Image 1 (cartoon, rainbow over the protein chains, first blue to last red):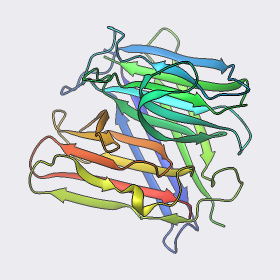
Image 2: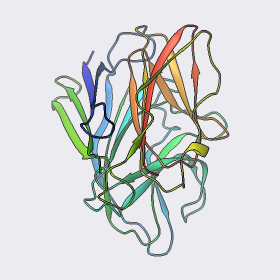
Image 3: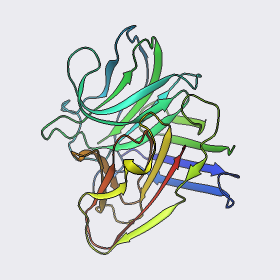
Length: 152
Length: 134
């Protein structure tokens, strides 16, 4: 089985009077075992056309895709490749509804230019699918996103 | 203003035939500005005597606005591969994913939804931090 390592470092000399230096490294294993995750999608880079008048949703991880194990230990990395602090992508969990940015679900947060995230993902399909989507705001055209899904 | 950086490295020599060596570094700034995030909860550690259901870890009411560039870090401190922390988003507790022992998450948070957790066993500990703007 594959060995994949994820390391996160968060550092600041001046966020508080006590310098912050947090570092974590973890091998990415399947649910409940010490066996490494073996499947991958990406690293992918996508251009999101967007819409001049409406928000648009783009599915990054589709919970109903049979290749994903529900309540497994999948991990998802997403990065907003913009270099502008003003350009953002709204990260959503749920199902798209309609064609103009509607959805049934919850807003997780916003990735501004250069921001990344790394989350566990359950690919839950109970009641509403827990797809992971990024949403471009209205009049946000041709933003680019990078993502990677590592799963069992 | 403070300068806080976050860096992630994902590496694998054998996940595919193409070795994975992904590194990303970002400076944590407020929404739509170059100004660094200014506030933090600090790194908090909580031990739960019993298994928890929908424990409110981060309350949206504590963070202003709904368009912010806050960041959240959560880690399951268990050393067991079978003990997990389930992260849930919003009032309907939509399941995001499970952090198994040693796993961590780093995610954007705009203050529009609560973040709750479930823990799968007694005596589990977690660590978390919010870095945020006013």
